[in-house]
Length: 224
Image (cartoon, rainbow, N blue to C red; front, side, top):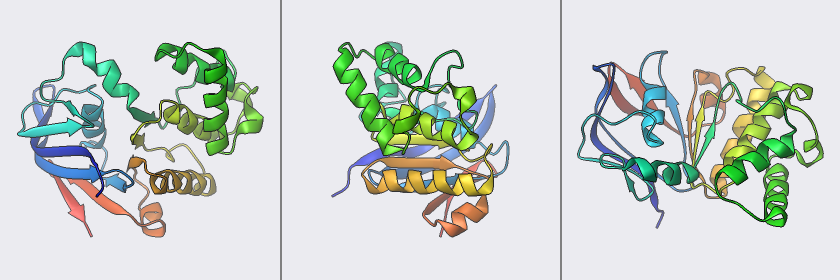
């Protein structure tokens, strides 16, 4: 029986005192890949940000990620929640003044890793998972957009998260490179990660089918 990683029940999300999404209910289980679609301003990013407590939930019966209750989460628990979530950004957000390896080491150190040998081994593992072991010494500006996004996915994997949130991960990539990234995210779901990917690219959704949640009219609906 699969474990439920994300569960929302009758949740309302507000930004600047305006309702973004209302009465939304859904579950996502481990090993599941799920697309999140909808127009710009439909609430996709706001919904994703509630999952790592960057946007507070206004009201709801239940809002849980892992074993964290987002309705009542304490501020000092937020960093621990975020360690269980891998976040993949559209604009990469890599540190430009240091190498790929140093970018990854920085995250491990920031999340409590101490031993150099364990950090080196974990960096090797995540780079291998995204096919980038030969790029560890490169600076971000020396990499293509697709290579940078692979490094971002490697960074998201560092703390072995059960949930990976990918917000328009192919938005700044050419179509062929976008396909590579989507395949990689599908592969990660097949290995047991729960993956939620926001996208405008409905062609990718059609070509690489999975469950689809759609934001629109302040509601969240499931498309079949």
